[in-house]
Every structure is written in C-alpha cells, then in structure tokens.
Length: 290
Image (cartoon, rainbow, N blue to C red; front, side):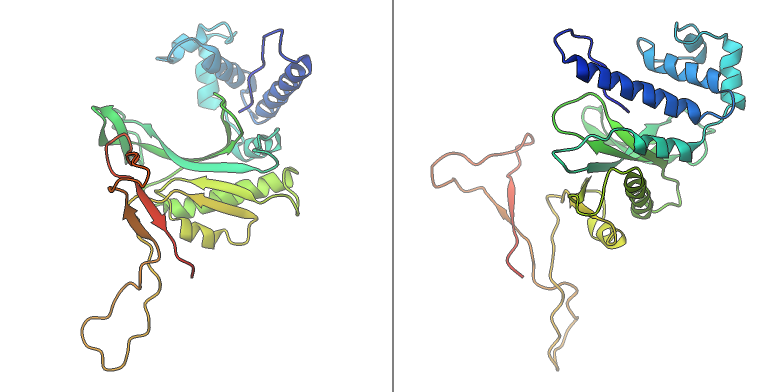
C-alpha cells in the first residue's frame, strides 16, 4: 500500500521520515477500519505481512513474534471480527498517491485467486492462467478479482492498490470495471488528489477489456483510457448506404480503418526485421485520416 522505509544511512533522512510518517498513517487508517476484535485482527495482519516464507496454516501465524496473542484470539478475530470496507477504501484514497510527473495513472486488471481444491467454495469460476505447465494456458477454478492500482515512475516492488472487487458468475466484467473506476476516481477527487485544471487521469487497460464501451460509460469523468489492442484486432468504418437495386446480402462491416501490415520483407537498410520472442512477424498498424 505504501513504500518501504529505507534503512540505509546514505538515504536522505527527510525521505526516511516522510516514509515513516506514511506508514504510521496507514496503520492508523487500517486500525480504524476494524470495529470489532480490532487488536486481534491487526496483529494477525502484521504477522501475515512479516512472517518469513509462505503461510501454510493459521497456527503458524500465531507463533510469529508480531502476533502477541494466543491462537484462541486468532480464531476469535476471524470468526467475530469485522472490517469496514467502505471506510478502508476512503482511507486508501486519502494516502499519498504515486504519480508519473504531475499525472495520476491508474491500472485495472483482473487477477485470479486460484482455488482448485476448494470444492465447497461458492461462486468459483474457471480462470484463464498461463505458465503453470510448460507455458500452456489452462482453465483453473478460482475467484477472479478486479484490481485497480496507482502507477508511479521507476521500478518498485510496492503496489498502491486502491480497490479490489470480486467478479461473480453473473457479473459483466466491463460493467463491474466501469463502476469500480468511477468510484475510485470519485474518491480521489474527494480526497483532494485531483482538481479541475489538473492533467487528465490516465487509465491503463489490457487487451481483454472493451475499451470502446468503457469510454462510453466513463465519458463524464476526467479520464483518458489507454488500452492495448490484440495483434489480430481489426477496426472497420461504418457501412456505407446501400445503393438502390443492389442484390445479395448487405455488408456487416465497412472499409477497414486499421490495416495490419506484415514486415516480412527486408528493410531498406538491409537489417533484418524485428521479431518477438515467439518468432512471429511483428505487425504495424496504419490508421488513415478520417
């Protein structure tokens, strides 16, 4: 949620103090979102974040130094505790937000929580997963979550997650993402991160999203959608009026607006054309003036 606190003495101490203040503020925000069994849930979260290696059982978490209570308090916190999700979302929006220059850049994607062995877990879906067996795609039961995070410049192992919503079997992913992005942008505006006159918020999306529909649903927000197109995507213009007396089936698509051009021929300089890691010919998209 927030950046790490540098321990190197060579790092600017003002930056260390600012990072420490952000961490303290986030801990206060998170603790305030736990109305019941707050101490047990808070220490459980600290143990979950600070334990070395993967967590294989709840009893192991109760043995962590950060968890100062017995294993009975751990189960009581899970069974009787609660969390105010709406308050947590507002608290996350109020924390310092990473930017790229002066612009807020958000990224939205669906990340599955795989649950192949949880036969009794409700509302599981088949999640599309790559790279689990010889690089082949698989469909594994799990819970897909739509995650929205703020992006910053440079490389970092920390992610500023602002919201996460589970996608159900009857949900429309585009509609869920549109409602989620609208709520996130509204919370950022209420927290004072964006004012009229500031650069528009960029939202980065993968190729699996319907960017055109999302642009229509979010047309009233100060955002710009940046979507990645599939390599086989074809965009066509509207169908021209059909002349009178024409026979045959009417056309469904008009002239192509983006033409994919292969680069199999050698370049004028004699250098080979670039190819991707799968040895497929790269394509260039040309969009003529409307």
